Image 1: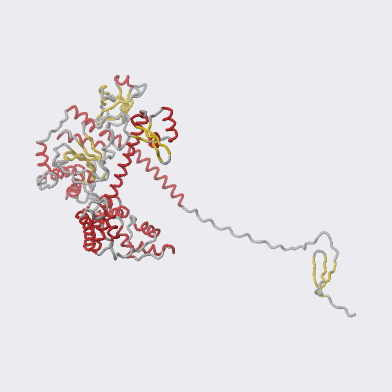
Image 2 (image 1 turned 45 degrees about the vertical axis):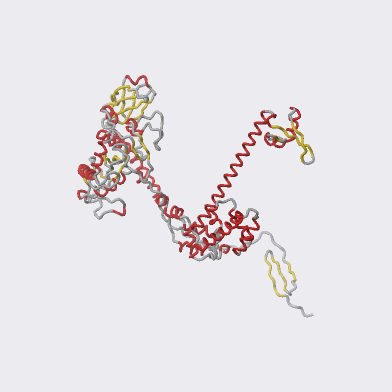
Length: 633
């Protein structure tokens, strides 16, 4: 392959002069030939140095890449053009499609004449077809340019005539249209008429004349439906317009996947400590069958409820493979999911103790918060909200699910905690045993029957007694105090000789939240068991729940004092000062003896004649004017 100096210069990205100098210096073999009035050197690429050959090869590769990119770009543009033309052709009326077909037939007639007579040139064939169809040769040329390079099946779409008689589109000033959209696309959802009236009132002269209301309504309908929904109804309404995800349960086995969530009952319950509130249930559900497996009830959704209800499920049915949870503070607590790579809540540290789900080897999936469709158990809560919360036993204690849905007998009584648990247990059993379930793989069976059938065919992992006992213990990372070698937990002190060598280091304390004074089991972060450490100084709380309640009581006291102080300060700021009585103006005194002021230095009197015929007399500091009488001479 032969190359010239300019080609080598482009490959090496240097000037042609430098290539000639190098060729002369290194004595590159060449062939001289005349070129544009001078002499050109032609080089054989095989005889050039290796770096030059590599540069030439790279240059050809770049050019080939650029050619492919340009070709792909051109093909993409042609494809997009065909797609747009085809879409317009599909929506066109029959008369326009017939016109396009006649144009295609004329072009095909030109090709037919040339195939029959190979000596016939293109212009002659077009003139003959123009005489047959009645159109001009220039029109046939224009049609031919439109379809040049495209496949014949696309010719009708490319030759579709423009639509005639289309009504003129009324123009709206861009600023006026932007101002209207700014007013209309709001979450308050004002109607078009009111926004149009406000636009007419505030539009300056450069925005006028404004189009009619009907025109504005048509423009509003041309806006994207999803955009209007997002800006006027919110993101949740917009997401309802998207694709729906239908998840099949046909391939799932029992205890393969579970999900958990908390539910607050709208019932006034009197707890054992005498307080009245709405009880919170934390439950676990088998996704394959829909059966509620285990649950616990408390005053609020806490990590303790999550851990204990999980242990109840494990003890009765086994360890699930996957669990779907939201990242609430209770579920994402380190007592339950500590040690996992991600929890999307709290700080994840390497020294964090393993939670109950982590120790059990459950794969936790964090679902989208505030999305009821992400967890099937939300459907069960809806049933319990009606079947349990509105039971006859709770008449007068039902509080309603919103301030606008309070019953007439709101707050007339409170149900005893033991009675509530009895009714709840009965309601959950009825929920699981009810026949006629059509969801999932129930096929008319109850959740209990479906779970029994799937459970018999599933491979279930059971926890040993030691593993179950470990799950029942709460875990907390504490630091061994320097000097004493003791650990402190809930204001209690725990000490043993085994902790002396680990002063200042983090250890994991496993304890029974209901009996903190008994002692704790201590492990190193690498799961090395140090032994049981007894409680040597019992000044704190005997249960973790009481410790939490004491902390909450302190926080409530602090907030109450701050609120009282803020209210006092607000009262002082808002209070108006008392109106002070006005002080009357002082009475001006009157002098009984008045003395005339006299100057100390006397001044000579003089008279001055004025043009008006008056004479001015000056005596001291006083001047007076009197008329001057004419003398008779």
